[in-house]
Each structure stands twice: as structure tokens, then as C-alpha cells.
Length: 208
Image (cartoon, rainbow, N blue to C red; front, side, top):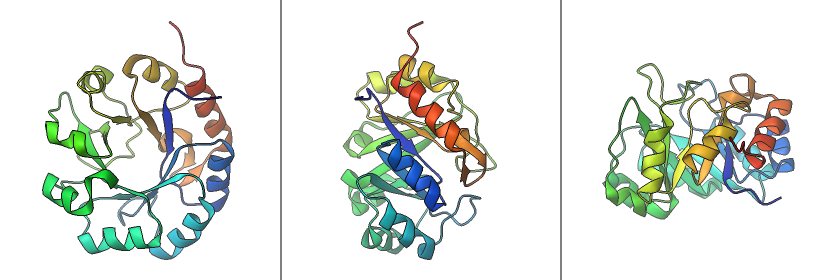
């Protein structure tokens, strides 16, 4: 079945979870390359996971990386980088805007510069003063909806799970939905039943 919205499973650390994601035909898989995250994947493990992840777009998630780290990820086979920190537009340009998903953390409102439409996409996640993403909490989706209507290519993230993603797709109509903690047993350990339920909910959005 052709999905109206793309799906990204993020924070993958285990081979069996990659295999399940591929079986479910997700569009993107994300690997956290931020050492302070409980879902952190080191370079060595990343190589093996990338080898398995064939036929899907592979995203390396960074927080305030060096340009050298980004280059290394591309050399290993990462297709896109998600910049989840305070990286500016000039840094993204140097990386190559067509390969950048720029994350913005939303509190109660947000302004995204028009120039970011040149990036591969923007990603909206819930703001936390304790962590860069992975909060498991959602934000006011009307903020995301407004950016979609302004013409931004939006990955909707933050607190999505099998129970609410159908409504999110219906309301926001994002380009893609991004989930990590909402399909987990614990950080970095995916729940295969929840993975299936999430995909089913995306493919069968509620009509209310």
C-alpha cells in the first residue's frame, strides 16, 4: 500500500530492529551519533547497521558536530544528516543543504527562516531543557501544520506513538513522521509489535 506520508524510525541500535524496519518498508532509519544519548551508536556499530540497512534512506543524527564527523558519516554510507543542535544555516550549506534535515525544537511557538526550505527537510521536535529530542512528549501540532501550509517539507516528531500518529497525520499532513521512544520497550530497544501498530496507524489515518 502506498503511504500518504513517509515514515522514519529513529534511534535504532540493534540489527533485529533494522530488519523489522525493512520488513515494514519504512522510508528512513535514523542512527544517533550523539554520545550523550541513551540511543547512541558508535562508529564501529554504525558500520554493521548501515550494511544491513539497504534500500532505505539512512540518517545520521548529530548535535553540534564537527564538519569532519559529518564527512566521516557520509563516507561510511549515511545518506542524510539530521542536525539537532544549534547548527546554523552556513554550517548546513557547507554540509550540503540537499543532504540536511534541520531539527527545530518547539516550545509554544517557533519561527523558521524561509531559507531552510532549501534543506532536504526540517524536523519539528518537542523542546526540553534536559535533552535534544527523545522526550516522548508532543507539542501543539497546529505549529507544525502552519509550517506545512507555508510550504516547508516537515518531518513531524516528538511524542508520536501508535495511538496518536493517525490523528497527527490527519491534522498536520506532514511530509514524514518520525518516531523513536513511541515504538520502544526501553531506550534503543524497539518493540516490534509497536512498530507494526505504528505503520498500520499511518496507513489507516482516522477520518474523524
